[in-house]
Length: 328
Image (cartoon, rainbow, N blue to C red; front, top):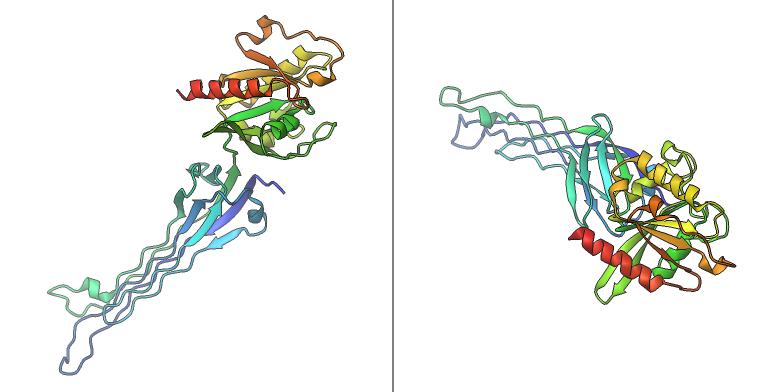
């Protein structure tokens, strides 16, 4: 099951309190203060892990609490610090403070880590308060409280090319033909119920990641259909491939719906370079009318049949060149 959002509670450990103690040794009748400091509370840390694909586990385990630090000991011994709690998340996860609404960290690289809740500082023991005029202090300090908060986890796929289209436009079929991804494919709308990611090989040492997004319908940006929960996955893309079924009765209307949803969702999706891809040429009995240049402007277009393999190599080459140009 693909889960791309979750909310969890995290609590860092409290710091240990300082100790009040005095040296008691033979031939040292009035030993000085020897109370050690408390140990630091454990932190709560998140790490990006490429082996984790979804946030499913966080639907069941929602509380992560780090141990407190040990109290200080005599003989100027500092208490043991609490162990850190490490939470491993998929690459592409955005961690947000639920109350403040601020982004704590955006995990975009393997091994990237961040402290999301800091453990409390250990309190000082009485040895810390010794002065020339106060040689037997009895002051000590309570350990600091660890941070606690509720955080929201939101997974956004790290794909360079986003495949966008109406339901049953051929996105999953295309992804399965140009990569090793195996999304569910069937001849009915909303076959794709979760985003799929595939690696497309261009040449030796050259490849890019493409994401198949569940089909958009009118009103997707408002939560209709499966749109709004998956539109986030194309926020990080560099290039958008707009797929239109060449067998549609009204290509202009289909294209208009897609552009409207991208524009309404925002996040500068409309500023991304676009390639218009006419799909399912194998099902055409005769030619079809392309969208007029006035409607698509300077957007490049290509006709393909994923089933027969028509123009797939050309499509991959065009997308690669668009990516190279955008990155440059």
